[in-house]
Image (cartoon, rainbow, N blue to C red; front, side, top):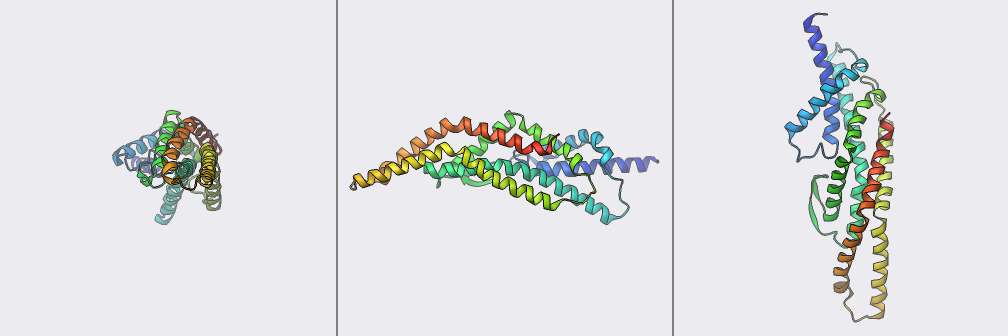
Length: 253
């Protein structure tokens, strides 16, 4: 093999790995946020691709001779990378659902702030829980499992093979359903508090019709709701870590 062919083959293999890795990083929580500098994400993606390349070289197909074949190969790698990133985002969506339930029960649904995780204006408590979950994710080394899932995806999704788009959509739909269920479980203590509190306020309004229940109940609801959230927060993050790790299990050996 001539030097030119050798260099072109190595560059082709490196860029193919870099495309899947960078597409996954772009969609993953934390690593793909707008607050992370583009140059930093680029260096992380290139470094990971450089480390992964010797491991996955045997499953990389030869350089196609037709531009259309190369385009389809690159498109497939982008779709696989975005799918892996979407899986991690779907697993993190349970925290977003829990924050929505908690904010409704505490009475802070109209308090908004910028959520760095979802990269948009969100409920105050939803943004808080998303930030805490992201910190816990990195502190518990779950980001290592996300990167392992990208590496080991080459055993499951070989480059150049037909994409299993039906399985991709089924998996994401299942994870969305699972996120709603896990969000309910995480917010269960605050939901029980809200049910008991609202029932008590309704009974009080019947016993004392002259009392302005809204003005009396609102500060108490916020105070007790935040206290309940403080008590339940460790349990919520423990459930999140368990669910996130189990959700990545099918993509790991």
